[in-house]
Length: 137
Image 1 (cartoon, helix red, strand yellow):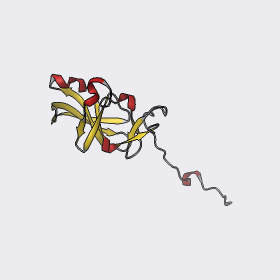
Image 2 (tube, rainbow, N blue to C red):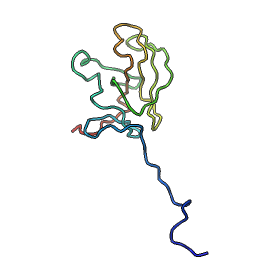
Image 3 (cartoon, rainbow, N blue to C red):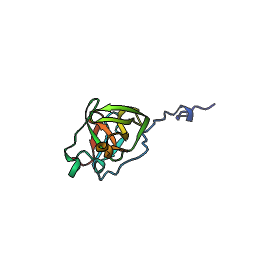
């Protein structure tokens, strides 16, 4: 058999690129997972920094400050469980990065107090797990 300069196909080193379920547009300020840089949320979906009623709300996660979002991408959701949080009893489900599996925060499934109903269906992501991307200068 003749020797060839190219290795056989089965010996070619394949590199796996990162693939996320969703990519957010580069034209918007976004938040990404600090551990793997998967996109998590568009700045426009941030509730806790919005004007009006929500402006002065600050959220606390298990590892410090957190932000409340209307919607997020590239996250998985665990089973819901009842927890007593600083604002009362809620049914929440932990959320994690679909890419690196890091627990990021939680989703509010149900609020038992009427003053907390606005949180239902919303997501908390702890600042310790996020990095700002795209156009924050």
